[in-house]
Image 1 (cartoon, helix red, strand yellow):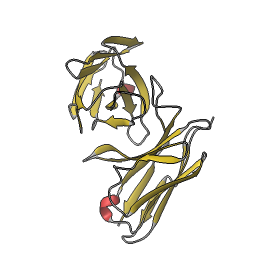
Image 2: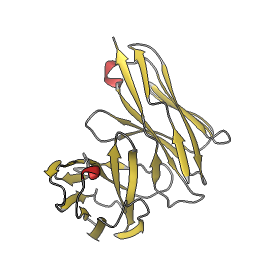
Image 3: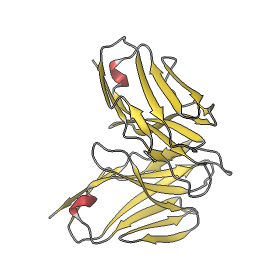
Length: 112
Length: 115
């Protein structure tokens, strides 16, 4: 089975930095993804980690520790448009061929 | 490419009616997924196909749900009979493969309301 935990809600102000944590317990691990979903829209891909460490992509960074079953998404220089739900997803299995399992998402509200 | 195309975008129906949701994946993508999203349960995987063959349907809630993929460019998710608890947004997604950084591309979703 699988269990992916994220905080339900977070708030922050424009220009700030926010860290969204994700912990997971899955039978096997073959990659972790972060998706962004604005209200009423489809999820869109943000980042991918399969090895331990930090992946940086502009204002967004994602970190993975496989031994701890832990990841975080770091958003810098927050903008109002960053208000959205952020979904952590894990690909289970010891080999390719398993679908993504998603956490319930963290709703981030950015205020001015 | 137009992306993953889903229809209808919105459907309101009465309990007991049959509902059919449709999806056209991105051309060349070998994998197609059906997810359901609700506030309570988040984004749940219902079923996925590889090269038109169902691989894992363990997420399909019950026998009222069925999914088909008759060819590489079309899939349907059918609910018969529908119930109010089926109200949700149903997303179709596709990907090239399940390895590495190959990402899921989602359609815009079909919002289903069962009265």
